[in-house]
Image (cartoon, rainbow, N blue to C red; front, side, top):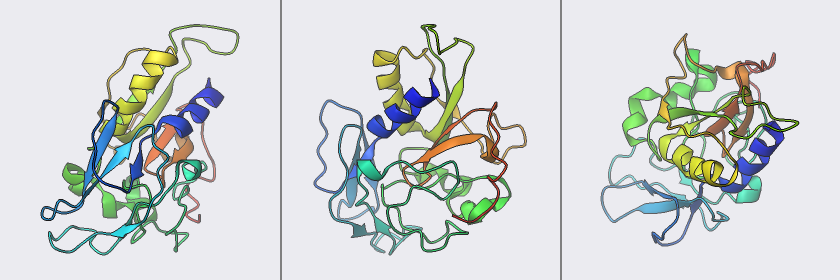
Length: 224
């Protein structure tokens, strides 16, 4: 099941599309970077990403004005199990995610103890986080076979709209059990999953697949 989840997430996670806003009958998330001039792009679940990068204007006092956005391609979406991975560009500091670009249009996750300066995109900005506040959803199968037990559970962590987008595909085509995302506080001591439980990061560490049964002993070595 784990291999299937990792492969499928690479194929169905929404990625930014750098051209004009167009909403069709498919899962899409609007990313707004200014309150004037209609500065916005679309994250498209089935798109390939790419296109030109652009710079967030300072005309609306965006908290990340002057940062680069977009340009990341779907084939670049997979990171590793280390926070800070999955950046096709902009990872100029290997021990901090602060002041990095947003190649896929979304912000990285944040973790307890301001790990790798991730409080820069912390809970204080969740109301304007692209795709909505950080959420979590369990991933279980509804069909037992030789390799997958119905007791086997993984968790997806990311913005709420991206989670809903991937669930549409998982429930429809991959026999995942029905579940809705719930709000998730990565800094809570009682969090369902923690930094060391992450199996794989995606989209510049903005999305993660995790399991409480897994522990990465190197997860807190802030150097990626």
